[in-house]
Length: 211
Image (cartoon, rainbow, N blue to C red; front, side, top):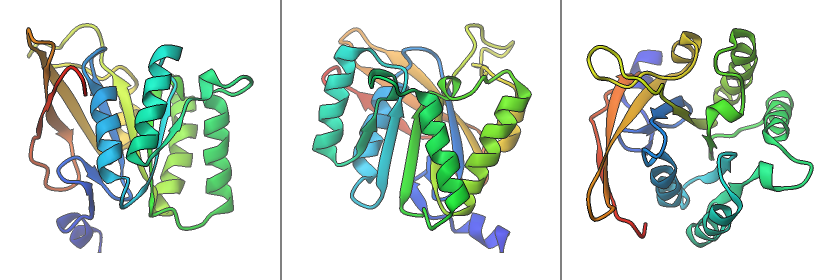
């Protein structure tokens, strides 16, 4: 059963997001991950209830993002900008959903970023978070975790995920983003599948300045 499910996955977004999976997307700072996933959120919002949780944003950008979400039919959650709320409240809400149960197969949560949700280098806090996330994907939810890479690359010049190896072990997919900035302020973003359960082809996106 598991094998046939992997052979014919339901793509939320082809070659990037599989329905009911946990995907972690590490990228360097200013590597375009927020821009790309805000756009993807709008692309998939006609078929899914998409919640974009951003705890990595300043007030002026937040207004623009909230407008983009409204226009493109997904829900923008900015816990740090609401008095008395924080990422801990979002996590509490997800834990409550997991406890109460239900069918969440029409929901996609994009968390920007993982580091704001848990201490990525603390094994026990990572474990607790992933117990909740696993419970939710067991009930059909699709979860995308945007993450940071270390400042320094490895010996082969590749980016390294910033966090404990437990995260890589606990997710279904880990797909890095490599970006190239151009002089006209546009950017080319490519996916680099690192750990996948399914047949993934690399993708390339062109991001223009006004996107």
